[in-house]
Length: 344
Image (cartoon, rainbow, N blue to C red; front, side, top):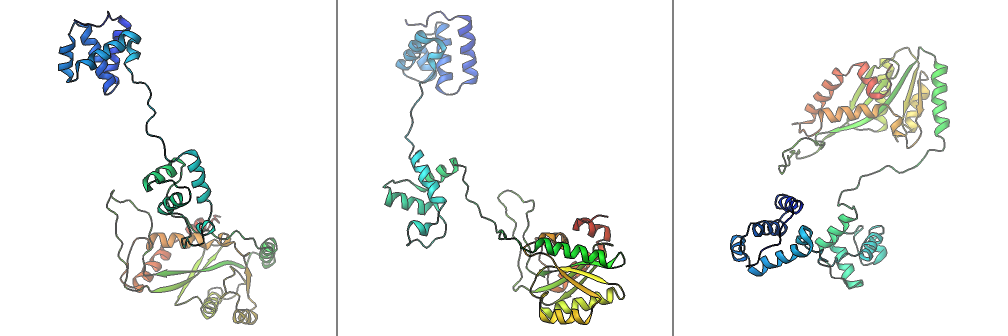
């Protein structure tokens, strides 16, 4: 009969740990050694674990030679990686460029996994499947995601001068003048999509209208008092902007109005300049170009659309306008200044 050599207390403790914490063959081998130490024969152990007697004898020899450490498997080399470091470097180089720069026959403007598979096969004679390419790109911390639109990084060379002109105009006008920022935004019957809580695997579908109807909302915020005025028009043309200026003159019938706007085309039209010349009480000043973030009305538009238009389909543009009226009726001057970043 073949039995394992006497097992020390430390070895028995380690073997018991291995039976509890190791998995697969390692745990099984530790149990074989403990059973053999209890004078169970090789045929009995083979029957218990449904393995060959040679397998049991192999475990006993490994324990005899190296103790509990001998029961572990030697490291295996495994299947060789197809996406080697050289292939990874090639993939990174390709992804940083334009496909049409590599081959003018490509009509695509960015790389897909299928295109990378084809290129590696035709030019480097490497036959790698798409899943292997994807896994290799993930190891390089790359993910397949949509990019985002970004404003061009331009700077108005007259930025400082325009900002100082606004400051000087406000100082000259004195505390009695109305300092008003104005802007326009577009509302529509097509719902805006925003993130929301959803059940996993059950993406919510937001219905859309058969046709999209839009309206222009002109808004004006008195940065000193928080007073808000808005006017709805069908479009954002110069005629619509002039109509909004006429309304502001009625809102502030006697005060000097310092009106600050961006450089939208309807604001700089010749007809607008003629209207301002006929109404000197209304002084128009322009923000620097490429600086829409300087207009405090942008956060107000964002709040309005997020609260009334996100993930909701209205039956008509009239219902959308009712929601706009309700939103602005609830917006207090203090709230408007807070959203605009001009808390008093």
